Image 1 (tube, one colour):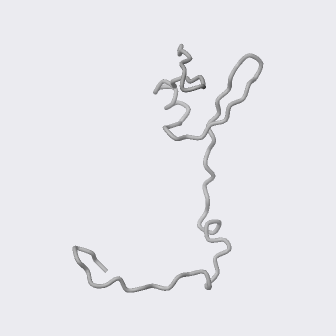
Image 2: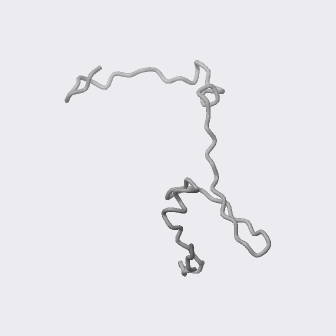
Length: 80
């Protein structure tokens, strides 16, 4: 598949065809790394780390939890 280099401000840009993006499992906003190998530009998507609940709660102690507070009566179809 062939694509062409365009200009985007002071930089150069390429469009990634949908079929290529789907194969690489990338979407708008995906962080990528660029590298040069010989005469080729290699684009590698960064994969987000998957955290466990224990990792997310690491460092939490009872003194860091906020108390509950009353926000008044229901005004719509809230179910408390």
